[in-house]
Structure formats: structure tokens, C-alpha cells
Amino acid sequence: MDLDDNIDLEHLLFSDRRCRTCGVVKNLLEDYYLIRKRRVTLPSSYSYECKECTIKRVVASRMISRVLDKWEYPDW
View (tube, rainbow, N blue to C red):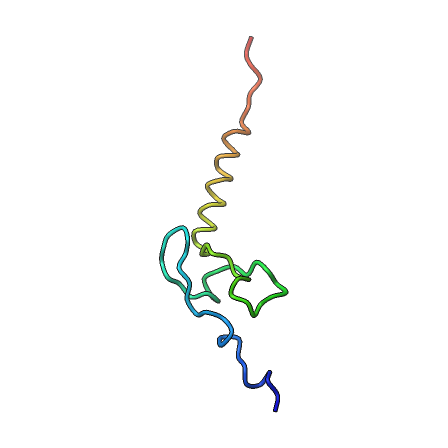
């Protein structure tokens, strides 16, 4: 009897998770980034922020850094 044949990845993972940012319940495997590649079977291997919220956060932080980088030499 082989245990690998009887256990599927979905049996080891939660199928849904609530996003910490937006609060919407989404599918863990499709809507969250895998952050620990070696521990795929653990639900803690996936982020707690959905892909959409992660993209929004990264874009917003890059926009702020671009505004701060536009430093000009003072006109004396």
C-alpha cells in the first residue's frame, strides 16, 4: 500500500483562505502566491495576502518611490 497514491495535495491544504487585506475568501491554490517552494504541502507555504492585493500594494509603493526620486538640483 502506497501512501502517495492515496493522499492528494488538496487533502493536505485548506481550499479557501480569507485575505488579510481585502477580507474576501478566495481559493488558496489559485489566488495566493506560494512563498515557500520547498514546503508545498503546508498551508503556511502560501501568503496571507491575495494576488490582487499584493499587486496593488507593490504598484502603490513603486509609485511613491518614483515621486520621491524626482529630486531636482536647487535653482540658485
